[in-house]
Length: 539
Image (cartoon, rainbow, N blue to C red; front, side, top):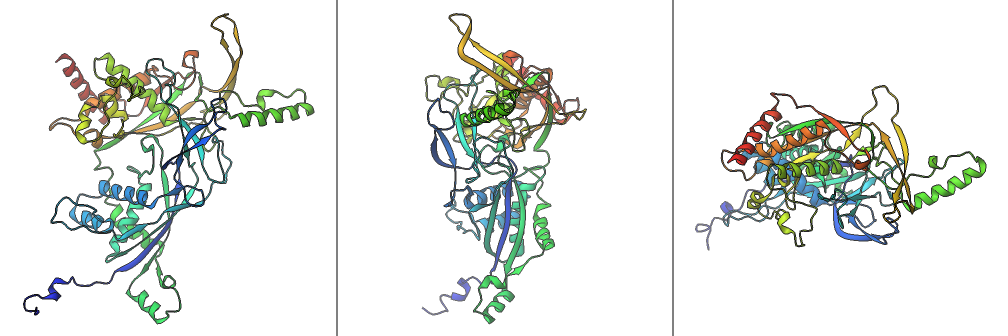
């Protein structure tokens, strides 16, 4: 066949030189971080009385230390760019060109392979500071974190709902290496802007499990960008005895910043400025507060040995000063008393469910076993978008299987006292009562160390865009915000308790909320939602 019938030059795409590049940097954990491997390990030292317990393992590399899978990092960076970059064709084309488009539904559309390779990120900066975190292992750079669920009827821990995870603490650094090819430096800038999403003030990129409860916050620190263009290739070919990477050009810090800023300055947040808002909350406790972090048997045995040695030297030594209490406050990696986001979320969710039942609205019980005989009390698993219509308002606000909560709640950290003094810790002795004799039960004496009248601060970030998903045309998410406002009203008035011993007077508090005044954005939307709920009730 001659070229008159088939012009091969017209069919062949014009060849263009592809510049090679390499990005290096460090991702360091700011909050506890977990990406599961799908495997569990048995630990006999966590609860010796109960026997071996299963712990969900984090994903690890060949050296036994945690890694950030390149596929996880790439997917999160791409999703953040798609969510936060301007809704313009140029940006969509760049994202698809760099990250690929994968399988497509349109048979006439061609699949585009990725031009970028995210390598697995190993631990290169281990945590060296002392840490009070439970079962911290310096070899693996992980600790064990316990989670549970409260039974809505009894108000105690739900049966068979306790589980453990192997978690990376704050202060651990992962090495990031990303390589690729491009025709335009703006493609490198797009990847750099995606990594800068970890430091975004309004819509930070989070990674891993539990991101709605303050987990997975990472910091990004670029270490260098190397490129190999036409001039660098010519230098390498003139000296082929050396490796090609020796001839790559290192970008200066201002070049890196300039490339990222071209994209980053147009990233406005999660879908626009009006798609989210943040509530700052301050909790002032009236008495003792304690979220329990029980000491391990090994800790108590070691403390007992130290006490006996110290007693030989000083008979006046106090045992409680050395041996940890049976109940003690949970602390963060800096040794500060903490109200975990999960505890705060659980208390608010329980109150929201009670409010919904009071006004004769549906509210499921997530503590019930979905595989048991009480499925009618649980909302269905969200597998498709239409399943969102069957969720109760509590599940739409606080999350459900298959549905990530639109409320991002931070851990509540301890604020300094106004007078500058340290907080007071007190140890109280308890004993269980024998239900038959009415006296103290043999061997059931215990004590609890609690902080007295602490003040905590934290935030709730509301993603309005997620709340509006699958809403009917012309409607909005005001009903869900009304429920949140009713819960916050109870929190302000002191009707919600936190932590251990609510029946003993522990955990009572009042709160202040920064947008709790008439005319604020949140209150105006909440008032519209209250009218909607009242109309539904009367209708």
